[in-house]
Length: 129
Image (cartoon, rainbow, N blue to C red):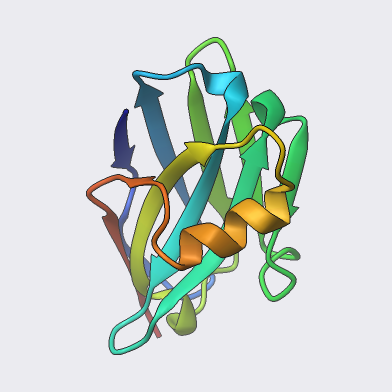
């Protein structure tokens, strides 16, 4: 399993960023792919999760009005579109993958926040206020 994140950076509050997670080494449709973030001094927070090739989608209630997740099955990639960014969104964002057969996206998301699955190296998102 290989996960490569990109797209992080420094952005002003109100701005947008699009994170990418390029995956390889497993059958994309059989895995749940999630985004988990860790803000400075805080624990892991589940942001979004897709499974079944992107047909099943979970986005955390706290950010679903501003964030959107997309999949490209032809590229085995998952994207996190983040709009109206706020200082509280500052965090390292990790792409996480785990077998998704037989579990819901919510169950997968919860497992990922407990550090289950394979993790990418993370990409830093910094929002200046």
